[in-house]
Image (cartoon, rainbow, N blue to C red; front, side):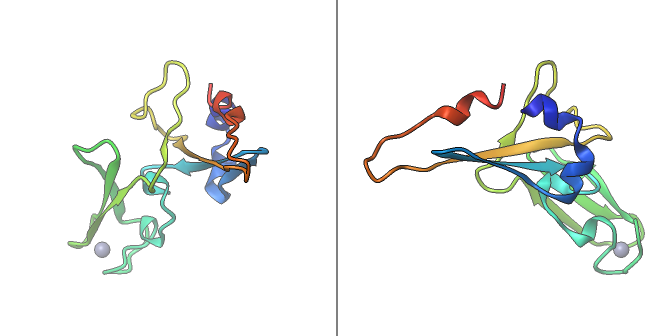
Length: 129
Ligand SMILES: [Zn+2]
C-alpha cells in the first residue's frame, strides 16, 4: 500500500485514505513540510496567522525528525507541528522518512477492533509492505 500511495500525493492533499477490514482499520495521512506539516491540516501553511501575508510561512527542519517548524519569513511568528498521536512513517524500500521531497510522504495508524469473543485478527499487518 505504501508503494501505491507514494505516487498519490494529489489524493493525499485532499483526503486521508482509510481502509476498513473486518478487524483492522488503517488510516493513511499525507504529509508535506510546507503544505501539510507532519500530516496536520493547518491554514498556517499558506497564510501567516500574525501578519496575514500569504505564502510566507516556511518549513524549518528541527533536530527531532517527527517535528517540523513553520516560521514566517516576514514577521516573528512560528509554530511547531508533530506527527499526530499513534501515527508512524510509511516506509517503502529504499526510502527513509527524510526523503519527503516535493511529493511529500505518508503516515499511517492501525486500529485493531477486538471482537466480543476476544479474538484478534492481524489481517492488516501485510498491507504496509
Ligand atoms: Zn508573518
